[in-house]
Amino acid sequence: MDTIILGISRDSLKSHAKFREKQNLPFLLLSDPTEEVHNLFGVMKLKKMYGREYMGVERSTFIFDKEGELVKEFRNIKAKGHAEKVLEFIKKEL
Image 1 (cartoon, one colour):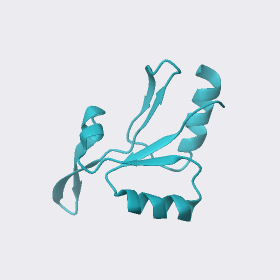
Image 2: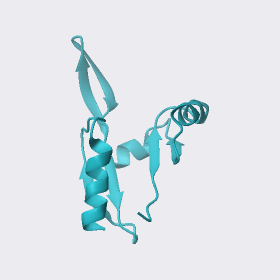
Image 3: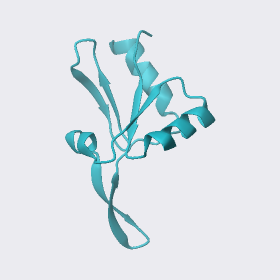
Image 4: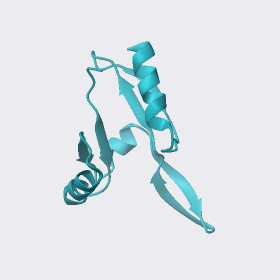
């Protein structure tokens, strides 16, 4: 589909390498341990678990066109079925 896929999280590069190999991922995983990129995209959110509040990542997907313009945001996604939704958008819109 003439696309570039990048994943990013706060995990270390070493952790990413292991995960990428284990899952056989064909794309790059970037490390953002200081949350600089996370904050630029506004994905750090206050979450609650077992009555405890903490800052966590809102899983999101961002799609950019060939000129680097943001054309679509998928926020607070669930993994099941998400790849299919992204592929459908790319086929229709890009």
